[in-house]
Length: 355
Image (cartoon, rainbow, N blue to C red; front, side):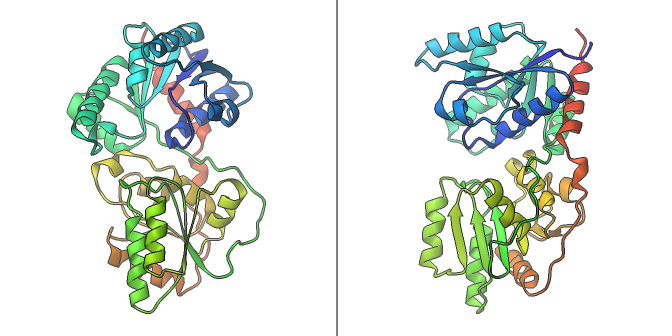
């Protein structure tokens, strides 16, 4: 079929703290540069009204948020009125399924994580699997952000999904001064129980026991923030700073002037399925990275990162070695990971679908 003239990005809920929404936002910007008409349907809430940071040429439809069954009809109406050649759906979700079920729109289903295999409580896990099934069968075209999901969709379901990972997203900043008064290891990321930042906190405890107190800054929000602040206090880790959510220039200064960047990640199905956007931010910062050879990480950083086993001991040793010697900048070749190329891949994927 011919290239689409209009793509509608459909979502529900607030975009605040939702890392997956980086993807439609950046797709939208890049598609507009290519002459595609782009519309976003978002729920009408304070954050979405004031802080979406979409391309000014994008059309935005704010969907009212009534309670109960009424929200189903308002979303269905919004999608119908938006029109468009394709409707983009970011991960399977109940409200999205309810709004699109029975409609005739061409849907491109986009997975940047595999929620069907998260360790939810049993009822939520069953719901996640049903929604995953729905979107795989409802979508006229499937795209995924990880090689693992691409291979598993083919192996398990005979479904050929297009592989379109994330790309760089931090804006360019001029040269900046360092916010650190001594060499500091930096971790950036959401502090949720399912992630693996426990490895670096425990590594700091191990290093302290060995009489070593390298500086570390942990940048991020999440349900575990207070837990780890208390951990740092209780363990006497005066060398560890947990400032919380950091954005903009202050985030860039800390990434760019880190002595070394840390990314602990274990080889489980959640981690091999996702495409962590911080990998691209780390590559943009051009600082050395200590991480694990898991999932999409080596796809982005290649052989230029230091890969260790996902254990406390391995991270403690690697941090100790890195902090005791100079660490020059690293060129990860990040230029190839750009949203212009990703938008072209999206257009190619949906352009291959026959009417």
